[in-house]
Image (cartoon, rainbow, N blue to C red):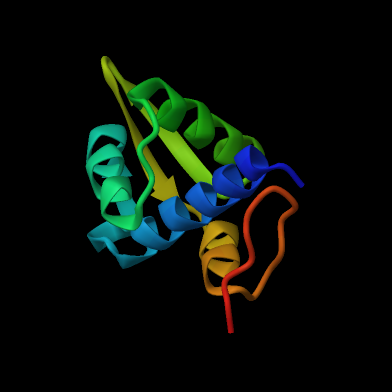
Length: 96
């Protein structure tokens, strides 16, 4: 696995975990962009949206495109992955 793949998998897990902690399991891409920097990730806003669409393809989030931002809502499957109860290739598994 390349370092870029490792970072992408970790970033996806962090996004899921952030959504799991928020009221209504939901946040917009701008909020996620700001929060990711607290965890040492500094992707572009475009990269955040791309990852959110990837997470949607895996059934981990549902998305609502509202102009310049995308609102992501964690699905039950996404909650399972964020807590380590389910495994999805491409998303880092949480540590014990």
